[in-house]
Length: 487
Ligand code: GLN
Image 1 (cartoon, rainbow, N blue to C red):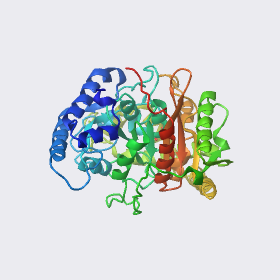
Image 2 (cartoon, rainbow, N blue to C red; image 1 turned 180 degrees about the vertical axis):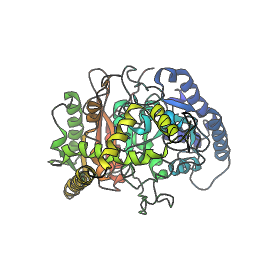
Image 3 (cartoon, rainbow, N blue to C red; image 1 turned 90 degrees about the vertical axis):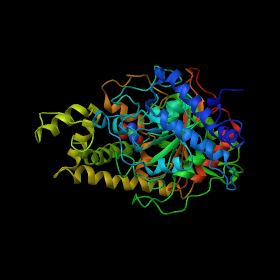
């Protein structure tokens, strides 16, 4: 029999339901794999072995008792959690030294819903500090490595989650996407990643970065495995006033009628600097949809080039407000001589990393009196134009198809001390966050060095069901998502 960790989530769920394997065995197999390879990959910041084994035993108990209602697919399935989602009693650090030792007194709603359905938590996955970055190089606890090539980054900020899924240390992982942090690492690591619509999944217990942009999403080895994760997490939560009340649609993976599907290909996403192999693979995938019956046409999203400057005003502005609460008094360690306000300055000065400090300064500047209208106010107006681009496009097409990233996974250290060149990694992912719409990243090829290439579909707000059925139809017809790296 193949290794248990080689199974997909749905295969493992099937084996659990049939009684062919137990959650304890499955969880042990994941923990053993983490033990064997995570020294090289560094996907996890914390491995919650005791919690995982206890949850696995509880899941086995449930699996043994007769039930007349269908069991959730995640019952007994080991998953990883990005280290920005609070898990009660488990160190939750946001990849920051300023939260070292912090154990939240409550659990994020997205995590609670999975745990209540029987999911097993293996541990907390590495992230850029406070989810600011595109490579995990900004983590205060070291960089994660891309399982396809350990000298490359896994992407970020949910790089630990993507690496853990790609290296088959878990069956799915939660991530968060404020400007691309689920889709970009999913593309770099050759897994499927969903950015949900703003408001679709509760942000309660997600440690805030940019509150008007933050979304909780997931990654798995294929789109079908992602569906039960989405269905469980989504839906209104009274604890998050921005979570939407709309009913969560049923995800129908099979039987999509692609002849009714209209796909738009935005010309602004095929720009200079796009790695030719990425363009070739994405265009080939779009062609495959045409062959499967979809109508494909070029569209225009004219304000696309403004998304990056707008995002890098709005996200740091919101971050500067959200991160004011880390003062060495309420959470984490306190440094300094024991005096106010010296301790505040010393704690923040020593324990925040360089990128976080840069964003706090940028954001504070953009919000300050005299500059607010010129920067933040202006950015909000342009954000409305970007949203308008999508609304106009979705009058004519159902889905928008484009690359996720300009290049495949870059080398660790490639962006050196040049934050701007790192920001440019996000050009294709930021617009969806500004517009609040969902996006799904899935593998469509490899470059000449064997690194995965991703394509993204975007849909109208709350249009996740359409993303799933289209991407699943592609995965049913292709095999880019079935390979995995040797480790
Ligand atoms: N890379 C982007 C940033 O640094 C997006 C991060 C994210 O989605 N959390 O802000």
